[in-house]
Length: 357
Image (cartoon, rainbow, N blue to C red):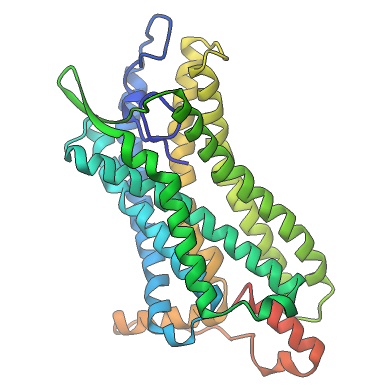
């Protein structure tokens, strides 16, 4: 999860790449080279993530809005996942500007609002991925029971619940993130009232943002895969690969950053003593793994939407209207009537269509 504050582990604090903070109890080290690296690396990567994430997730939103008359629970989750990632990436230009100048120039309100929006986008994206995982688990493991609940009303109710939950979890970022003036340099920092909020942010980042979602994915998909393997469906191998990709991508993109945050948390609490060189390595690791983790929002449209032939065809048709003169070759839709020649085949098609549409 993003780094939301100066002296904690959960807020975006670009000053930590340049200056020594008051939480350190020994002589300050020289991180000038690291600061120069961050001023170039962060704006460049943030800008790239913003462009790719905005285009990919924006296209998902446009396709789903255009075909809203055919909306189901899966489409509702995809739509809100794309909105979450859009909210997340829309905050990156502000942080790109902040990291390039090493000072905040957008005022106190925008400091709190951008930080809270950043946090809300992150958590809602994670939570909607969890909802999609549980929905797929229900479709495959408890199809008859779940079918009656997979309605438009259920989708709307789940959407409201997830957004409210994400907003609630992110409230500290809205409340405690403020502009400070340090020797004439304005910084946007997360300043909690007490240590309880420091532990809360650490818990939210690592437990709600990583451990629980990853655990849900591993448990659900580990039970789903054996069922898929035994089904008579031409799509089953693609679906198994998709499942592995979903879990692997989430793990590889977010775990390194959370490990770095964990080590910095131990250091800030005085539980880990490290040298200046090790501190420099930790800060560099935080910078690199943070931006690497953020690119996950660019992959979500590919992993969750564009892997399906039906969705891809819809996207290509939309692009044809937007980009005249360019011809795209439509992919063959595998979810045709040939998968419904028997009750067994129909069941297989229903299950696999929960993953790829």
